[in-house]
Amino acid sequence: MAHLTVAASERAFKTMFDLLVASIGWEKSDSASFGPFTAGYHIKGHLEGGSVDLRADNTIQVKELDIKWDILQVSLGLNIPEICVGGGCINMPWPIPDICLPQVCVFDDNPDVEISLDLAQFVAQEVSFTGSLVARYYDASLPPPLIDPCDMLRDVLSNAGLIEPLPSHNQWHLFIDPETVDIDLFDFPDIVGDLIENALTNAIVAIIPGGWVRDLILAIIGGVADLIRFILDIPDEIDEWLSDLFNVSFGLFDFLVTLVLDIFGHCVPIHRIDDPFTILEEEVSTSVRLDGAPVTLVPVRVPILNLSVLVNDVEMIVQADAGA
Amino acid sequence: MAFTDHCDLFGSVHEDGINIVVAHLMRQRPSLFNYATVAFHNQPHLFCVPIRPAQTVIDAGNPLFTEQDPLPVFGAPFPIGINFCVQITKAQVDFHPGNAVQLPPQLHPLPQQRFALRAQACAGIGCPPAGVIADILPEVERTLIEQQKLAVGKLKEPRPRPPDRPRDPVVLHSRELICVCLEVYAVGHFEWGPVPGSEQLWLKPKLDGLEIVDLKPDNLEAALECYIATVLRLGILPQVMVPIEKMVFDITKQAKKWGLTLGKQVTLQPSAVPADVPNNPAVEEDQLKVFVKLVVTP
Image (cartoon, rainbow over all chains, first blue to last red; front, side, top):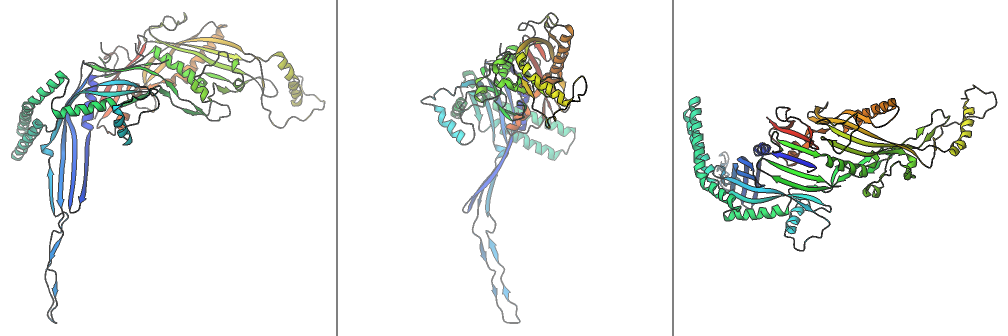
């Protein structure tokens, strides 16, 4: 029997998944000038929908997680040098006042020509992912392999400050091992469904100011839009089902993404646990000596053995033993 | 049957794991378990039970024990002390069913949902040999006369001026210790409870009973038991209570680490007894188990 067992139910996963989906959002904007040209972007997005499922084959499946864009704006600008005509004055003899011509300038804005395109309504992505959690032991005393395909990737990521470099002590590493990834770069069912739903909703709201009749019609429109989304999504569902059945991502893009994630999953741990694990931190104590002189007490560490992560269709179980 | 059939999060520790951790603690923080006078630095062989620290403790030059003042010799005209040591040499926990710790008849059998503790404590006193006492006795007598603290009253004979400043204690050395070791057994349980100043519930160990084996006279045993029980209840057990969030996963802290602000409040609550689980925390199958519900509030 394992010394330590921690288990999280599928319901806990679903609760946390829904909470994270509702909490995750991003917004970024920037612009740059290239001589007379300017280019900029403003993006804002969030996650929506999706579901998480723990499965009997030791995998976790995240299904149909929508990436929605509130703003997906790209702007291009051209600044044309200002051209002015007129503005001069003709000096007339006294008492005739000077005659001044009005000045007319063109291209005095900056930029003078700007094209701004917001694609938010027409772009949406959908991601499905199946993978498992794998625990592996990193033994710092072993010499590194002669050819380590992960070495370069780890160096790049650690030099960029994205991950910690490999330590000089032993660790347990937790990796995500992806099996299938399905990314719909253009989630047509959702795009079409949203467009139809928005157009009809706006029309109904304009015609009927309020009341239960409007609510009823809006509810029907929502149902119709969902039906359209469902019908249009059937080919993708079949694709995901086949991917799941054969444990391989169909489509060149999905295949490449799976390959890349596979490399990341194999090389970059998502969580690290020091072995031995510190249960009492190093401490400066002034109560060990009678004269109150400070003494730095070494940390108390316990070796971790047999760390494992198992998933079945109802829960995820993490187990470990304490080493003597 | 799944671990989380009636809860969202489940955590358990096996008695063997706890006993291994305690053994590590004793080897890597020996000063928590050994108390002695300064003289033991130079005479570690005097300890009742040899201290076997981890190599890291030796390499770091960490003290093997917490220094204590010598036992005072009451009535002496100047501070005189005797070396002593107190050691906790064994500590072991046994979750129901009792199989790792053989409880004394007074506590046997271990009730359901209870844990047993067994500890061995040794205390030694450096009894000064007759020669050492004979050597210091003239000094004691001379000082008594100086201080006019004799039982027969004041003396009229001329006396030298007493020393102006207090003297350092004189510690009576000995070549060996007289040691006594006691086996202490305790039975307790765990419960969830609040702590003033904290918003969450804490898992607290509570002492139900304690027994020292074979100590006579009975009142000495009762007095020592009372003292040790008080030390456990007020000194040691409150230090090992654990907040519920630390039991499994500190969700709020982890979310902050990821740079996420969760739009809702996530709290952990113990699963209800008996609606969800028959016992929570449960001490059974040689394990301490906790069942926790994840509660999300707007």
